[in-house]
Length: 484
Ligand code: FAD
Image 1 (cartoon, rainbow, N blue to C red):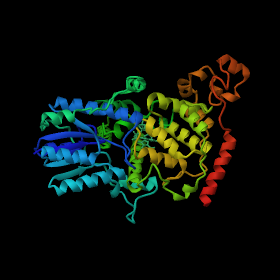
Image 2 (spheres, rainbow, N blue to C red):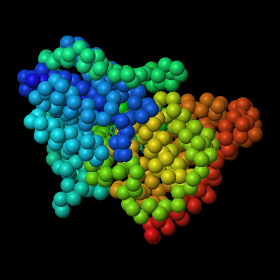
Image 3 (tube, rainbow, N blue to C red):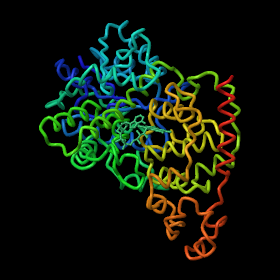
Image 4 (cartoon, protein in one colour):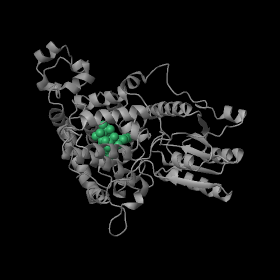
């Protein structure tokens, strides 16, 4: 009798514990993907992330074909689909790799119970984290609310287990004709937009799937990691790994990244310094921490971790929200980042912090508006990292940044994009401005504006809020929240 391997955010063959265990068990396998429907807190990917997911599924299907099988897929409710398929093929068991969002876990628990009642084996595995969220706890046995002690405990537990090799041979179960037809990938969903082809730039930037992930990792270990600690905040340099969408959809596992880096370090084959390596590890640690928050805070994308912020007087300002979304706030570094996001589905971490702070603090718009825009536009839109980071930026979260931390978009631009190269790349209308004024074009002289061919207010907007006034308003508002 076959074993069904239910793929979710683990779209790879190597270091895939569920697939590995199923092939080792000696049973033929049925590889399944379910396009789940959104319901209550269950949040299937949208927009750009959905596009990334489609590419990853197509890649997985190709890899399975090379092994003589294929991916089966269907859209609908996971419970109904998995249970019905298990019944129809007389499955011995169903294996999957765990997910950590509470709504997804509820679905999985219900399926597990019903399958077991029918005598089927259900096995679940950790494929996406260094540490299971319930294994990193403080002395009182509670989850950490602050990153530094959380990560100290994570490091204390040592290196994660070694990654598993990819399967040498997979024995596939064959589905009867009509069933195979019904479950044929992509199961009625159009994987790539054509008209309009809004993903063209994203497609050019990087290949989706397992091989693309491995190439990106190799390139980063060869070139990018060296100097990471110093350069990672620079907007005008590509100094980070750009692995996030691959990690999000499991085209690569964090264990594979960790062990590839450590193995090279031990072999003396890394140019990078220890501080680069430790810094990079700690960024992977932030991802773990976000997952721990998601696991322990059921509605991370909906509810303030600190309930006192429920009384926050957020402003409902559609025009300001739209200006932010379209990159027309009049603050060049904010606008460049928002346009980069729209064009590429990606945004530098420093830029995410700047635009997040601007939306929440300068515009006093609810962080959930930002979270939801990112959820639709980022290729790496992640159920843990996205809401956890937004709550961090807004100061409503666990590891809240001090409330008086209001990033100044002018100084941030000057510090992390000193020549204005990043801004000029994404705002071509400012390309001819002298570097000295590019982060605050309203201070340019009439001659400078004329020479650069810009009419402020027409070609590029005036700032939609005054920085000093917005800063004062935010300080007063956050202060009152702290008091409440
Ligand atoms: P690198 O610097 O190379 O880091 C390596 C990996 O570590 C990343 O791929 C990512 O998995 C993890 N990581 C790095 N920084 C963080 C962080 N601050 N928090 C959690 N994990 C981190 N990251 C997402 O993956 N998905 C999101 O939806 C997301 N939304 C964000 C929203 C906001 C408002 C902010 C401030 C940050 C968000 N991040 C998110 C975190 C971070 O910006 C991205 O992970 C990072 O920019 C990805 O680029 P990279 O792969 O080159 O990162």
